Length: 168
Image (cartoon, rainbow, N blue to C red; front, side, top):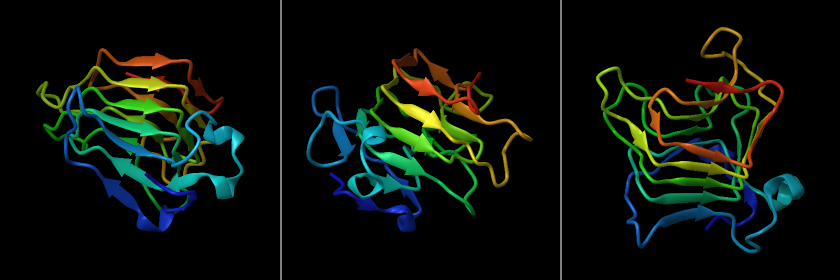
């Protein structure tokens, strides 16, 4: 659990250990489990810079805020390093606030060889908005969710702001 606070100074956080279908691992804002970060004041949020799942499976990210801000290239949440063979499967990205991302909010990228396919993930009740690129990855485009290697991804009741969208 993360207590409310600003954790952006920690930079990129990497998860590598798996949960199981019966014992998921959690990274969440402690306390009330129903209020969305959009409805919280900044000091009430757990604000992180970026997280890389690094092939971790059966995780739930819940009620966290991701704000990359200036000086950091890459997605706010990345399923695995770009072009790797790692696959982050069966993760739930729930009630997240992702703002100020540089290029991509949530990335499910893999490699061209068909490995690193991210299976059965869910993005639900997540808000991705206010893309403020410093060095955009794809010219001047901004993607809320990059789907290059996502298989059976479900996006449920989520909001992608006016400056972002989907890329497959």
